[in-house]
Image (cartoon, rainbow, N blue to C red; front, top):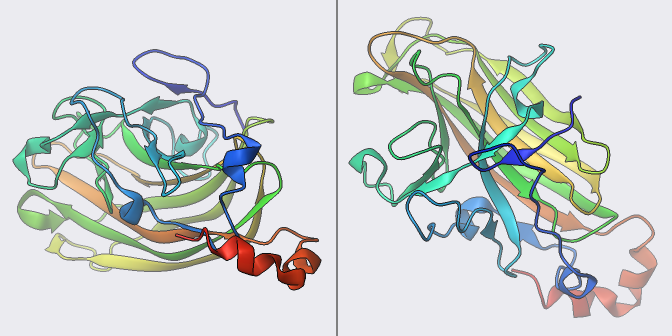
Length: 267
């Protein structure tokens, strides 16, 4: 895989929020990150300020990006390519969503508090939304990822059209610059003709992911073709949580009463 970088308007080294050992101690086994629950609005339209967004302890963990690249299984899979830091739009296309992270004023793709959209119009489809969770705990972190990914085919007047859609959850290793797939699948629209409301739900249960300082989890979707004319898009509702679990070898410590003391910090 290629080395990653995150850029804001121009290419630059990856920007991650790394925490000190003192801050890392605030996280206890059982601590849960959920980006919808952690969601806060951006501060300045057209700015990256507030991206990444903080968790309950104040560490910037939810980073919103857009990226270009090929389909799942290709030589240039989109989620493993250099990405771009999104900016805040407080009233994206007047849809009353409370704002979204985007790649420019009224530009696609948008990422909202509970979903992201890949617009398949031939003028917009090259830009693909991606959510990044940045590990705030440090070396030897172990997490579980669980919940449901809901993919909906939609578009102009809510009509979705058949298009194969790739969905991925991946682990980016900061030190090596490599990205490995934890879940990857290509989903098909249930009705193979234009229709309203077609959704596929994918249960997610990924256990025991070991992460070091600066590592991250990537979540994204990508429709495999574009369309001219009326707008068509695919939506990913990422209803998942990331939970901190005891690292291997910590069972004895927890059994001696450490668990009670640690859990008082749970959010």
